Structure formats: structure tokens, C-alpha cells
Length: 142
Image (cartoon, rainbow, N blue to C red; front, side, top):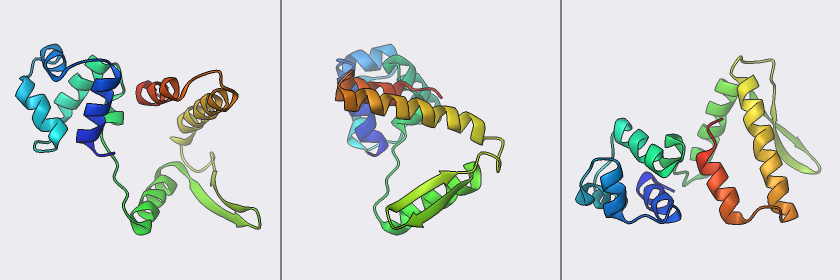
């Protein structure tokens, strides 16, 4: 989802109107509407304020649009450079392996991946709903 869609989705998930969110972050209702319509791009400061008001990580409001295999590959290349991901292909399929020895940033990332795996299992077991899982993803501060 792109930023405008993320803001709208998270606002609705929080049960807020545009006016209520605007009041919480000291903006006009018109500004929130323009962000949600994609007619204006919020600054980093505004993203932080909206994230705080919605109790979600500001990063979750920044949409990452991947519309081609090449764009997805560039994202994977960036993950490799930053965190040490490498591809592994065998008869059972394709996977990414995280070499935790390659970068210092990897250890924190390992924790985040383990937390994600745990929540995925809870979802699969029915311990949490899809809505609870989505809320966890948006609020995870890692």
C-alpha cells in the first residue's frame, strides 16, 4: 500500500474520523483528507505525529510500492546489503537466508523476524485474528 492508503487504513482500524485524527495531530481535517487522497505527501514529522496518534510505527505508514519483479529484486538487493540476506534455491523452492555474521544490524533484525514468526504461528493456530495480526504488524517497533 502507498502512504495515502496506509494512513486511511490505520485511521479506520483505530475507529477514528478524519476530523478526530486531525485534532489529535494538530492538523486540519482538509490536510488529513488530502493525505488520504494522495494529493499531498506528509512530511516525516507529520508521519511521526500520525503514527503516534494511531499507535502504530511511523514506518508502517510509509507505503512501499513494488509493482514489478525488478523493483522487488532491488528491494531484496537492499536487504542483502543492509542485513545479509542471500538467496537459496533448491528442489523444494526458493528461500532467503539471513547470514547474521555479515552485518551488525542483523541481530536486531533476527529478533524482529523471530517475533514475526511467532505471530504468524498464533494466526495459523487461531490464537489471534487477522485484524489482531495486522494491528501487531503496524504497531511493532522492532
